[in-house]
Image (cartoon, rainbow, N blue to C red):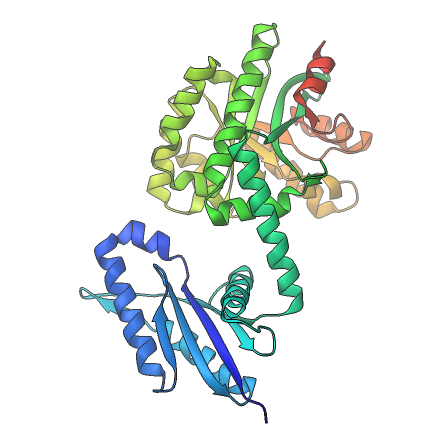
Length: 395
């Protein structure tokens, strides 16, 4: 039987977070412990190398069948899942492993590494703490991912990120009182790339900070322009969970308000429930600092995440946005209707403003007004639009 060579790329899950929170000294000790544990698992024919901060490569020659590779990969994952004892304290880790085979899917050393990298990212996408093999399907995804990352970097670098604005209306009067800023990216043919494709990638690569800043600056400048023309339009900007890991984020927001001259009461920051769950005390401090600037804090997609009532009490929240999945189904599904009713009632009790997302039919509008929901947005009124189109709408 023809023998193969297998290359495994091993990456410690969430290592950057561990390194930042525990300190680089403990981070280095973790790396050494991982290296020792990997070394103890492998035989003399196998090559082990550290190729980056938290990445290791295992090269296995003379592979007779993939079942051999499976067992080694599983052993690595299971062994790494056992607690690491450092300075009299236990730390739990997991790893993601990508596997590429020569000659099955790679003909050169460079290809082996590239393909193992793609497989490792697939393992992370599937929930981490697992291994994945490379495939043709992965190659297509990997190339698409590289292409989108390049597009994103270029757009940020050349200030070509587009921001669209979806009007937010007072439901009873139909008056436009605000907008939600939504980021847009175009490819070489001027076609829009789905945010589902580039926002997770921006978070993964760290580009989310530059992307978020571009959206914030454009949104604040737009709202200032409308205010100067006599329109008090509050702009809501989405903040990704990763942006909260930036210790300087509050200063960035304050500086942007100062540079654009936008009154802080015309800015609203939308955060998802999951973003609030990372480090309770740190997030609380960050939100209090942001609230002290005079801007509003909104919880986006309320009802789809943790929906803990404790954070509504402990965090400076001003607005609840009901997720569009509940709005969409409220006319046909009694449970969705009950959830919308409950969230609306909760918001009134806590003196919070309520916004319904995804209003697409007149019946949605009528039901929401009846329930006492004040604000809403959706295709029934307007789709997201470039600033020029929104300017024309105001005029």
